[in-house]
Length: 591
Image 1 (cartoon, rainbow, N blue to C red):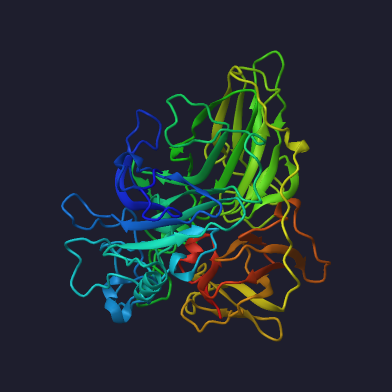
Image 2 (tube, helix red, strand yellow):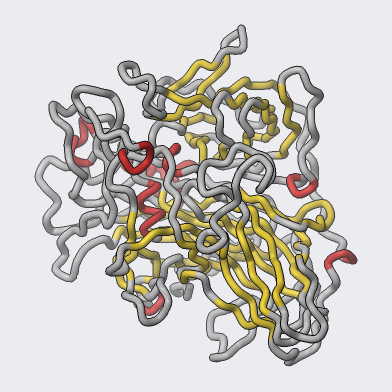
């Protein structure tokens, strides 16, 4: 995105809004889709779903004025594109200042919320002060002309963080916006930004509020020219060829008119048609998971990418709400020299930057929010070959195991297909270093832990309808006897590491599903995983280095080690967004 002229020479400034617009997501000839997306307020042509990539440099701060632009041309607020369940513990603007960020009480089953939409943007992977983290209760409504009387316009922590930012940076926030500053002192990495408003993250992200943030340079990056390039840059001429390409992979569903489809009620998940409020505690609209029947890459369904017989660097992001992806590249060729049946990935990095060494993988398993920085070598693939990025993850919640053995893989006619590559002639020599010959920047392992915390993941079933699936999912602690102690979002904080300490968090998963656990503010190391009565298993080779999201498998203890070096209020949560939005998120304090 094009930056504004900086007010200070050492800070790059952006003004970015979330807006509603129409985009050709489905193939040409089919209807366009109304979506939400981010873009530069000074450059209307930059609005896209997902957002154009923000490029940042190590050590150069970026300051973003994030605006809630979900208004129509007359300045009136736009309702959500998707069904909002107002019975959850959520932002709840109608509750006013006294009841915002709470679970409302209803005397009858309500319909979807149709009021102004709260947003707040989180830089996923960044290490920032609390007022710039995109805290889930620091949301804000658009500065619309028709906000109903009595509505809370901002979340519970918005005013506090506004004051803190003004004190620290000399700039206050205006109506319908927040200003964040990112120091960019992390290792060169693949970050992303997305909405994080309490209880509606799943819907805001599904509608389109997400984008890449690539941090380059510094001591943990490689010199230009070593890896495949170039990447897309501002001002590139038309027809420019790219050999480093970010790919955000999402699953979506559509109505016949091209509009986004998201389940409108709980019955879509398990057939439960009520009773709901006030005769049961099952949310009437919320679904425990959501799986679309169409794969979308960078805002297009099943795209085709022309490539050359050379090496490519792909920044892969699983941007799905609930779906785990098992990615593989396979080839079909009518040429005389057939291409290999499966092309391997060489993984160079994950969420925390480069790995200690490249890892060769036949397939890449990623959970929602995980990233994989990979090289694929097409050098010896004949011109005319068609290759396919396919997905063999399940069309349901993932519990571990291998496709075709422990679970049925995705439908090969729909969600099993991701995108297509078509190999054309080589136009220029490839001077990048072969991935098996790369020497990657090293990192300093974290020090020994000062303490260990025992944490739990569990499901909450209905008190009156135990045969119905989960009514919520919970994080929590562990009792002295090893039993889960489930905690809700608004229960007292139990994780309060001291500034400068290093901790091991033991995550005990008591559910039947694998959960991607994300801890804000820190980059951690995966220590090991362990099943009861079995020896501990070391992290996978592609999990070495630093991460911000880890897969916690069912029936296992997953241990991660993190250093907490910045005071403030942050969150940790499951990154299956339907889980996060219904209690599977907890605040934590660095004190």
